[in-house]
Image (spheres, rainbow, N blue to C red):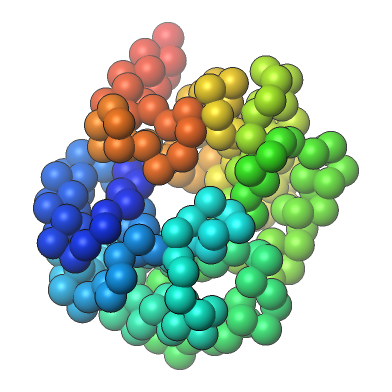
Length: 227
């Protein structure tokens, strides 16, 4: 599943990007952390059944600058409006993640919960990565997302190893590396069973370093799957 990630600055820009991205992807990640006052009813009306709402913390590469209560309120609103997925960082804490999970259950589980962890500085050991996987799982994740920065080509291998480990545990996972040296993992991850792969709408619109465009991802994956 290819997920195009968009990071608009206004509701108007978000609507335009959604109109372009939804026909090109299986899913669109709507990053609302740069929008001062996101109009979620308006934005999710564009196609909530294929929209992942993320309100990314600054310490994990996001832009949200208001208070934490407001950040969480927007995610709960997205759940109430029927977003297909919401993403919450494991660092948010068990209590806050639990409240978001409860909101999802109240809405009869229409929304899937992604619990994510991003390491913007590097890729830790296999043992540390497994601890992070289990920590996200214990928070009630439908999907665990583990993303690190690749400082060397071999960093990709440690992160990709998480995918078969998670599958053995019955846990859906997204796992790959950021950065120019992490591009290999972005292509390999879906072939190994990562449930989605993030891409940009076009060159220059990347939401994270090393991100390929949706067209590039489709082309490469198509070639690899055929061969």
